[in-house]
Image 1 (tube, rainbow, N blue to C red):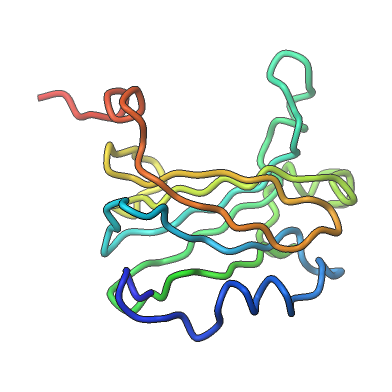
Image 2 (cartoon, rainbow, N blue to C red):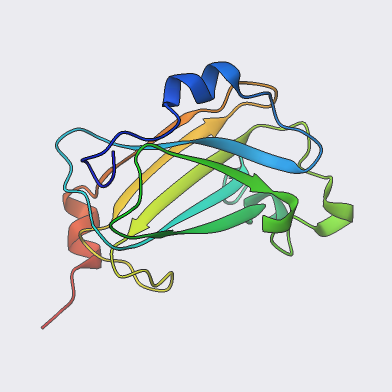
Length: 161
C-alpha cells in the first residue's frame, strides 16, 4: 500500500515465493510491513540493520554485537507498502567488512528496522515504528512487521518540555 492506500507492484507473496536465496552480493533480504492498526507515518526514513542473531551482550565479542550492514530507505507520499528490501555488500558497516567481510557469512542475522518519523537516524521519537525478525541463512526472505513503540518505549523517547 502506498502509505496504506495503493497496492505494491510486487506482492509480498510473490517476493517470498519467487525470490532466490541470498547471492554472492547480498547480505540479507526481506519485506517490511506495518502491523494492522498502527499509525503509518507519511514521511521520514526507514532504517534497516542486520546483526548476528543470537549475540548476547556480556557473552559475545564486540564485533558479534555490532551491526553487519545497514540501509536507509527514504519515505514519501509515493512509497508503496509492503516494501521489499535487500542489504548488499555495499551496505556493510566497517565491522561487517572486518576480516574481509566474511566472518558473518553462513550465519543467521537479526534484522531490525525503525520507521523514523523525522528521517534523522540520530533521533528516536515516540511515534517511530519498530520491529525485528531473524533472517535464516538459506531461508526465504522474512516479513519484518513494524509497529508502534510500547508504553516504555514511548516514555523513553518522549521529549521533555
